[in-house]
Image (spheres, rainbow, N blue to C red):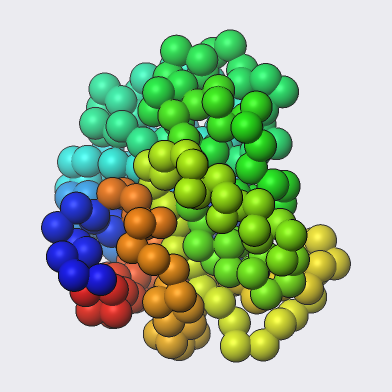
Length: 233
């Protein structure tokens, strides 16, 4: 992938899923003196998000390039990220659309829809700026649902991808306790080789803004980032 990183940037991410110690990650932001990081507050309800935002204000963080929106976030929160943190990329899950909430319509040119548990649809994608590629979800479908996978590839060939998530892929399949489905994708990386699957995708599928979506510590994410940069150089 010659000159891959000349047009792309990858960021560590403050994730907030159940396996993430997000308050600990905020302390890491201070210790590591990080000035840029993506933010995925998706599992947090409004009260916890406000705590998160207040704590972020006390860190060295200056720029949040990419935010994963939660379904109950409104326009005021999006405005906060744009004005306070210079955010220009947001993504949402497909199930948010029915249609795009009125409070978010004014930001549609900054929002990208993720491939998740449902196939990307023209009607959803046409409401926003384009696609958010979750590579671990894509790899899951390649291994478990070829029809789903081919549909997503067709969308990637015809629609703009503005951002992406990178998570880990397990060497062996396992049963997701929440969905009871067999999958390979996971949000904690145990071995650096668990991102080697990225080599199976052409450079044109990788958008300019890429976030590491892992529950690993920020320090570990920086090591993972270095590995990915070398992997895709």
